[in-house]
Amino acid sequence: MYAGPTHNPNLFCRAAIYGGRALHPLTVKRRPTVNKTELLNKLSRDGDERLLLARTLDRLELARTRNIPACTGFLSPQERASVENLLSASGHPAHLFYGGYEGAERTVCAFLPDWLEGADWASDPDSCPVRAIRCTWSGVSLSHRDFLGAILGLGLDREKVGDLLVGTACATSWRWRRSPAFCFSTWSRRAVQNSRPPPCPWTGWSPRR
Image (cartoon, rainbow, N blue to C red; front, side):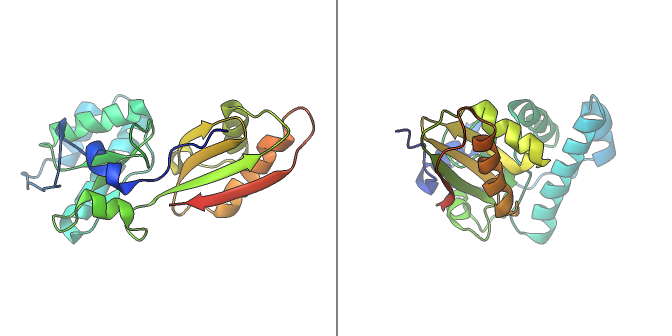
């Protein structure tokens, strides 16, 4: 049976990125302020990318001005590349990409105050918004496509859902903390109901740390 990776904050520091180099312990370097409008005009290729970059700059500014942790929603690899270009043009502010486990494809970009280290942030449920949940079932074959289709069918924002790893009878996903739990319950039930043969016994989603 597929067990899936678990949320392990001890792996976190190896996933932290600062200007392309491993960052441990996390340090913060203050950089000169860069004009937001100029950056967006220069780096945005379309309206969607401009909105993504603007929101990222807002999170960076929040972390700097209020001295609290702030992060984006889950980013696709393409969105992450856009954010990396933005941060490079912004003077390489201290940041890290984190998806709940080492090697995650979909990650959030987090900006932390200088009093908070990455490993402490990842292990603090009040600070880190990334949550792991698991669904198990029996008697039917389900694929990544089944679960992803259920997500889109619910109208759930893709930025609220991280990687989705599906095994023989178990699926593990990472979600944004504020995403309603009932959405994921409905999501997994719908994936089972849309499969063939008919629905099987289902044990539901359970949170994982």
